[in-house]
Length: 354
Image (cartoon, rainbow, N blue to C red):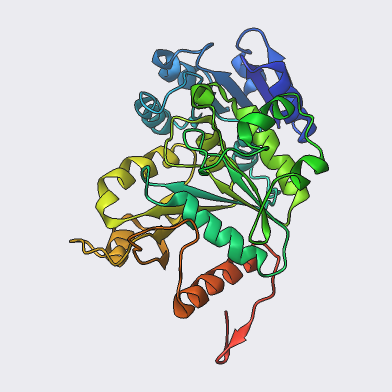
C-alpha cells in the first residue's frame, strides 16, 4: 500500500521511508482514482478541519490519517471526535515522527512493533510525589543488578534541590546538536546504584524544548542502560510530557484519590494519543490519608490498574523510608516490570507463576 503525503515535512517523510513505507509526496491532493485503496496522509495546514467531511466524501476508498498541527492541550478534542465520526484516523499536536510511524503501522496492520525500555512516570498534579516515586523504582530496579538511568524530564521542576555539574539544561546543547556520547551518561549523578540526570533548572526555557530533542535523549539513554526511568512531571503543556506518553512502554501515574477531578481530563488527553485507561498503572501516593473514595474504587471507576499504594510520611524525604513489608511489595512490582520488559524470568511461587 502506498502513502500519499500532503503537507508533511521532508524529514518526517524520510523517517517514514526508512521505516519501510512507500511515500509519495504531493504538492496538491491526489486524484481519488489514484489514491483509492491506498492511504492519504494530510495535515491541518493543508486541509482545514471544516473540510474534513468533504475530504472523506472525495476519498471514500482511501484510509486517511489527519495530522493536527496546532499546538496546545485544548481545542482539538472536537476535531478528533469529528475524525472518529468520519472514519478518519487522527494524530494530535506534537506527535513525533516515531509516533506517526507507529500509527501507520497500526492502520496498515503491520505487526512489527518496536520494543523499548523506557518506563514513564506521570503525576496527576504538582507536588504529588512523582519524582520521589520514580527514584524509588530506579533504586529498586538498580538493586536487581541492572544498569539504570533516571531522567528528570519535568521541564518545570528539576527534581533536585542542589545545582549540579550536569543537568538537562546544561546538557541541552549536546542534545540539540545530537552529539550525546556514552561518556555523557557516565558523568550523570550517581544515586543509590543508578545514574541520574537532574531536570531543567532554567525555568524560562521550559516552553522552548522541542519534541525531537526529548525523543533523541530517550533514544540515546535507552542504548546506554538496561532500563530508563523517566520522570515526565505533571504538566501536559510540555514537549517532554507528550513524547513520554508516546515513547514509554509502561506508563505509571502517581496520584491520590483527592486528584479524581484531575485524572479525568488527563486520561481524556492521553486518549487522543491512542492510550486507554488500561494502558496505565496507578501508584497511589500518601494512601493512608483519609479520603471519601478508596484507591481501589478510584482505579476501578476509571478502568486502570492499581499497581501500588504508598503511605504518607510527614517529612516526605527524597528517599521514602519504606518498611520491610512495603519494600517487598515494591520489589515484587519491580520484578513484574522487568519480566514485562524481558529482563527477568518469571518466578514460581506457591504453585503459580508470578
